[in-house]
Length: 105
Image (cartoon, rainbow, N blue to C red; front, side, top):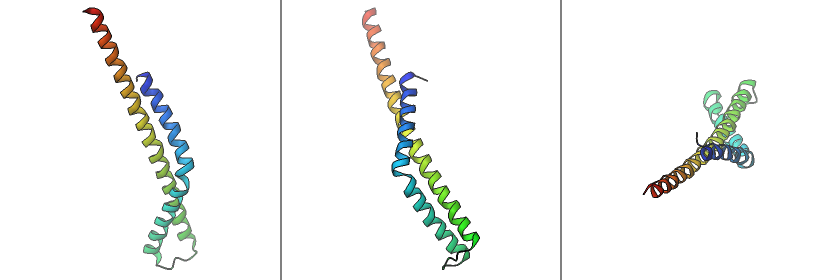
């Protein structure tokens, strides 16, 4: 792996983790909870009671929502940082090749 691509990957991953902590944790929990309530309502009946099964289903769906938000934020930023690093490496390589071609001529 090239140095700029590796550096971009690490910077993108760190940025994604911060983005997740700031803007992904709470919405992921809310969206997962709403999905869990919809699933529980479909399986157990519309007025969702406070049974153990309904609480477990909602809790698991909230955890899945938070996990998906973490994956999306972290992986999206990591891929973006890696792509920017690859672009920088490609530009550097092009400059070096042109410089070497000019020296040979």
